[in-house]
Amino acid sequence: MAGRPYALPSSKRKFVPVAQSQIALYAAMLLAGTLALLPFAWAFLTSLKPERQVFSFPPALLPNPATPYNYGRAVDHGLLLALFNSSVISLSTVGLVLVAGTLAAYPLARLRFRGSQLVLFLIIAPMMIPGLVNLVPTYIVMAKLGLLDSYQGLILIYWVHSLPLAIWVLRGFFQTIPRELEDAAAVDGASVLQSLWAIIVPLSQPALAAVALLVFLNAWNEFVIASIMTSSAVMRTAQVFLYLNMTDVGVNWGEMMASALAINLPVLGLFLLLQRRFIAGLTAGALRF
Amino acid sequence: MVAPALLVIGAFSLLPTLYGILVSLYRVEFVELLTFVGARNYVDVLRDPAFWNSVRVSFTFTACSVALTFVGGFGLALLGNQQVRFRGAFRTVALLPWVTSYVVTYLIFRWILNADFGLLNAVLVEGFGLPRINWLGDPALALAALVGVDVWRAAPYAMVLLLAGLQGIPHELYEAAAIDGATRMRSFFAVTLPLMRPTILVLVVLLTIIDFNVVVAMLVLTGGGPGIATEAMSLRMYNEAFTYARMGPASAIAMIIFAANLTLTAVYIRLLRSEHHS
Image (cartoon, each protein chain N blue to C red):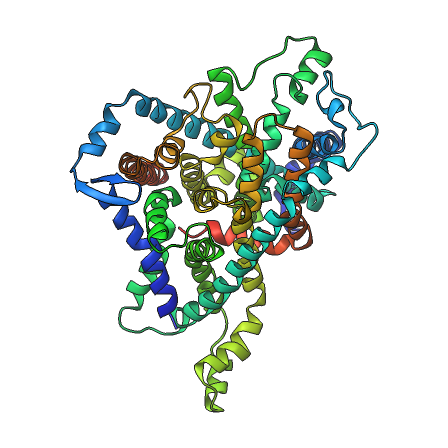
């Protein structure tokens, strides 16, 4: 830097407009941030309003009086059961994906066996197939297996849909871990599974966490498959519950906003707590091509 | 160790795709394949004017949405890449729409766009003295609303991927450009864009596939309406299968969507490759 004689013109040009461009920059950031937050803020304000205030024009900005009434109504209509269903399905999916994904990714990262390239191709090929294409055949298969309207059916589908990405990300991460540790363990008589469990898994916690978050997010937020797989009220996931409440005659927007925010809270909370892992997962998930 | 994963993926992901091709060639009653009808389902679908309407909706929605999401995401990424205070907070806030589910997002916007009590009309009427607009009741406005909300939802995702690309550009290149007297605008077009090409390619392909296959947006915000004005191919397929229980024609539409996806991806890759070489 110091030894560059031609650096002067650029630094001279930068120097003058710095203050102005800084202000413009902050203004643009503020605008974008407001645009991102405003719908959530409006939904929150609506959720606290009594019914006659929700249906008034022009709308009052602040709820008066602020009341948890809409949240109570949402609970009366089955919000908690829907949240429970989604929790069971999403967490089971995450567990199954981590176990099967780790077991599959390890040999694919370490071993070159006959047909290993073909196996890898078959595993990641589904990532090229849009989910819509499999919707009708999956429904027919699940109907014939008697798995419609059950936890097992949805968990199975989410598991299968998440595995290719999980295996791809984990395999990539395992390949960055030096082999020496496993070689040493093998000399000491450790089996493949033992060194996977004792060496690879602890070292791979960041990748495992990123995969877990991404899989949880996808399972929690998924709607289309859940909507065709669940028919009885007691099996509804949170997203299906929300949609079906909306299509009921006479939408109560206060209650809808209360349900929507409650259903969004788990993913929002996880995201705020573990943002870095989320972004790692998103980027890894996208760079799959 | 690979066997369990391979087995379930094969049985519940790869085989269903092949089975889907078969279904599209049969007359189907509920979930039973009755008689082989060859291309009959495809002919029926292609003869239906409503299908061609859905093709138009799909391409319009996808083209507008991908272009605007790309521009918006690039703007967010350039903002998020600045060395300023509150950068971390800005990135966090900007990403909130992406972790929010489709149903929640479109439901909140359905309320905001509500003709009688919605926030947007309140701002227009009270703030600017404009007349009330029936956003979701007019065909063109409803499609524009779908695109707008989709951009709001997807721009953060574009931001994350583009930021990863931006951070991969060595800083020396900008310094060299500045030494040669390049303006900021010039170095954006001469340094940033060319080096971002691989990231842009991935992003545009991903956005296209996501937008082309979106069902929930239309289902929640407009229900495909008014009439069938915002019924994309994806929603048409969903309705054929699960509203009217016509699995055969639905499978035919699914295969057409699949083919369109593959074609679009191939076209993009060709376009961006050839630009790269010239």
